[in-house]
Image (cartoon, one colour):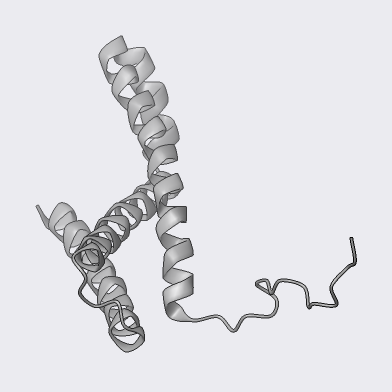
Length: 127
Protein backbone atom coordinates (compact mmCIF):
# COMPACT_ATOMS: atom_id res chain seq x y z
CA UNK A 1 0.00 0.00 0.00
CA UNK A 2 1.52 3.29 -1.11
CA UNK A 3 1.85 6.02 1.52
CA UNK A 4 0.10 9.22 0.48
CA UNK A 5 2.08 12.43 0.91
CA UNK A 6 -0.49 14.21 3.08
CA UNK A 7 0.02 16.57 6.02
CA UNK A 8 -0.50 15.34 9.54
CA UNK A 9 -3.72 16.14 11.29
CA UNK A 10 -3.60 19.56 13.00
CA UNK A 11 -3.62 19.76 16.77
CA UNK A 12 -3.82 22.34 19.56
CA UNK A 13 -0.35 23.71 18.85
CA UNK A 14 -1.44 24.72 15.36
CA UNK A 15 -4.96 26.01 16.02
CA UNK A 16 -5.46 29.58 17.19
CA UNK A 17 -7.26 29.58 20.55
CA UNK A 18 -10.77 31.02 20.45
CA UNK A 19 -13.03 31.80 23.36
CA UNK A 20 -15.56 29.19 22.27
CA UNK A 21 -12.79 26.56 22.21
CA UNK A 22 -11.69 27.55 25.72
CA UNK A 23 -15.30 27.54 26.94
CA UNK A 24 -15.75 23.99 25.67
CA UNK A 25 -12.71 22.87 27.64
CA UNK A 26 -13.83 24.87 30.70
CA UNK A 27 -17.27 23.21 30.53
CA UNK A 28 -15.62 19.79 30.75
CA UNK A 29 -13.24 20.92 33.50
CA UNK A 30 -16.07 22.34 35.61
CA UNK A 31 -17.89 19.02 35.28
CA UNK A 32 -14.84 17.29 36.75
CA UNK A 33 -14.51 19.96 39.47
CA UNK A 34 -18.16 19.50 40.43
CA UNK A 35 -17.64 15.76 40.75
CA UNK A 36 -14.65 16.27 43.06
CA UNK A 37 -16.54 18.95 44.99
CA UNK A 38 -19.51 16.64 45.50
CA UNK A 39 -17.14 14.05 46.99
CA UNK A 40 -16.03 16.71 49.47
CA UNK A 41 -19.64 17.66 50.20
CA UNK A 42 -20.45 13.99 50.78
CA UNK A 43 -17.54 13.69 53.20
CA UNK A 44 -18.77 16.76 55.10
CA UNK A 45 -22.35 15.42 55.27
CA UNK A 46 -21.19 11.99 56.47
CA UNK A 47 -19.05 13.72 59.12
CA UNK A 48 -22.08 15.77 60.16
CA UNK A 49 -24.16 12.62 60.57
CA UNK A 50 -21.37 10.70 62.34
CA UNK A 51 -21.21 12.87 65.42
CA UNK A 52 -19.45 15.85 66.97
CA UNK A 53 -15.91 14.47 66.72
CA UNK A 54 -16.15 13.70 63.01
CA UNK A 55 -17.84 17.02 62.34
CA UNK A 56 -15.12 18.88 64.25
CA UNK A 57 -12.48 17.19 62.11
CA UNK A 58 -14.29 18.14 58.90
CA UNK A 59 -14.77 21.72 60.10
CA UNK A 60 -11.09 22.02 61.01
CA UNK A 61 -10.19 21.05 57.44
CA UNK A 62 -12.88 23.03 55.64
CA UNK A 63 -13.61 25.88 58.04
CA UNK A 64 -10.68 28.14 57.17
CA UNK A 65 -9.65 30.53 54.40
CA UNK A 66 -8.50 27.73 52.10
CA UNK A 67 -11.78 25.88 52.64
CA UNK A 68 -13.73 29.04 51.83
CA UNK A 69 -11.64 29.55 48.68
CA UNK A 70 -12.36 25.96 47.59
CA UNK A 71 -16.06 26.48 48.29
CA UNK A 72 -16.02 29.68 46.24
CA UNK A 73 -14.41 27.79 43.35
CA UNK A 74 -17.00 25.02 43.71
CA UNK A 75 -19.78 27.62 43.54
CA UNK A 76 -18.22 29.20 40.46
CA UNK A 77 -17.86 25.78 38.80
CA UNK A 78 -21.52 24.96 39.52
CA UNK A 79 -22.83 28.23 38.12
CA UNK A 80 -20.48 28.26 35.12
CA UNK A 81 -21.31 24.65 34.22
CA UNK A 82 -25.03 25.36 34.58
CA UNK A 83 -24.91 28.50 32.45
CA UNK A 84 -22.86 26.72 29.82
CA UNK A 85 -25.34 23.85 29.90
CA UNK A 86 -28.21 26.24 29.21
CA UNK A 87 -26.24 27.59 26.25
CA UNK A 88 -25.81 24.03 24.96
CA UNK A 89 -29.56 23.44 25.30
CA UNK A 90 -30.20 26.54 23.20
CA UNK A 91 -27.73 25.23 20.62
CA UNK A 92 -29.59 21.91 20.60
CA UNK A 93 -32.71 23.84 19.59
CA UNK A 94 -30.77 25.19 16.62
CA UNK A 95 -30.24 28.76 17.82
CA UNK A 96 -26.97 30.66 18.25
CA UNK A 97 -24.73 28.17 16.49
CA UNK A 98 -23.11 30.68 14.15
CA UNK A 99 -19.60 31.83 14.98
CA UNK A 100 -20.39 35.39 16.11
CA UNK A 101 -23.36 34.45 18.30
CA UNK A 102 -21.41 31.59 19.89
CA UNK A 103 -18.60 33.99 20.80
CA UNK A 104 -21.04 36.58 22.15
CA UNK A 105 -22.85 34.00 24.28
CA UNK A 106 -19.47 32.82 25.64
CA UNK A 107 -19.00 36.30 27.10
CA UNK A 108 -22.56 36.22 28.46
CA UNK A 109 -21.96 32.85 30.12
CA UNK A 110 -18.74 34.07 31.73
CA UNK A 111 -20.33 37.31 32.91
CA UNK A 112 -23.42 35.57 34.26
CA UNK A 113 -21.34 32.96 36.06
CA UNK A 114 -19.06 35.48 37.74
CA UNK A 115 -21.96 37.82 38.57
CA UNK A 116 -24.20 35.10 39.99
CA UNK A 117 -21.34 33.58 41.99
CA UNK A 118 -20.46 36.95 43.52
CA UNK A 119 -24.15 37.65 44.24
CA UNK A 120 -24.51 34.25 45.91
CA UNK A 121 -21.51 34.83 48.13
CA UNK A 122 -22.59 38.35 48.94
CA UNK A 123 -25.98 37.07 50.06
CA UNK A 124 -24.36 34.32 52.11
CA UNK A 125 -21.94 36.71 53.83
CA UNK A 126 -24.51 39.40 54.69
CA UNK A 127 -27.35 36.98 55.46
